[in-house]
Image (cartoon, rainbow, N blue to C red; front, side):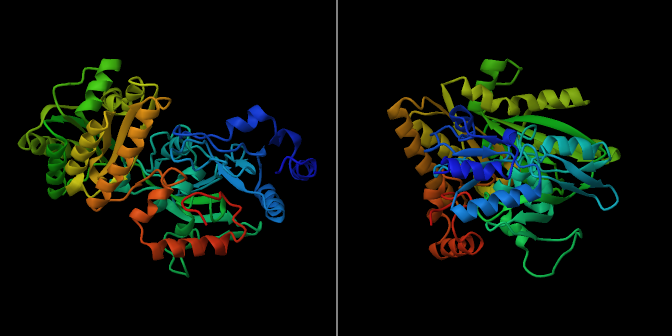
Length: 463
């Protein structure tokens, strides 16, 4: 236990008193994240707020010496228990390391600390005519450090790629307090192993990212949003295939199923057509002179594919209104029951219709309310299941349905996490999608970087 006075005193030698929390109520807050299927088994023994790389190194050296677990935390918005403190120890919160150190307009890069909020980075670079495309749904609060840890994606991933595709260099504090750099400030780098990609998606189990150099691209000159209804998700997916086959590449290709449409309309009354079983939302971008050409041809394809109720935005306000229904789906589903749980399974686009149909059938089997949304372009599906976690039977039904959804996903050649990560919530299912030898090598990598298993222990797999 860290709460022995000598250990508390040790932390106080590293940080100012205001940067250490030890009260029970304070520690309870930082023991949880956005996962709501269960609570952390233990509270952290202390919560610390480093303000510099040197302070991070000192804390890690101290923890390594005393075999104290460290759980790093950005905004705590992950949905898989990646910030749970089941082993107690130290929660290291990066809210005070939140500076955009530099934006280089010529090289099109940004140097950022891990606590930088993604939405804030996007706003600053876009004001300079640049663009950082990764867009997790909670980008107004989620941080760069968290996005790197969980390999976050978002609606624009299909066209532009996810967080992993924009990492040029990382400064990482290792479990003994030493520090490494994983890349360079150049776009190309074929010099040795690509260590940076090893840390992206590692959920803080291999090292602690304390600074990142991210790639930027030119900001598209213009964008427009199109919406269209279909009689089934399969028809919507087929229309997307036709759009792509005609060499058009929208920046986003999102969908809502009939339950999501009905649920959003029930609580927010924004004028959605509840008689249709699928809504496709397409965003196009590029040079101003290309927008009309893209829109006219995509609408032609949508009409040929059996779409109805086609609308498109003519200004930013109308674009936001079209997106409103998709972005309100989680909040609307949360109004159906005391709790709502979501997931992020993914299959190839050709199997998307089968996956959505199968998820609906599974949830019907277990009498669960589900609204399904997702990204058609990459086959990523988010089933949003409303339930009462205090109802034991309903919760058991959910756990049984979850297993069947994962089994269905794997049978269709998919995987169990596209952009949320594994944490504690999904680690029991990893052997279903990754073979034993691969997992064994992952554990060997973990032991090389963290021989004492102090960095976010118990996440992804157990040693």
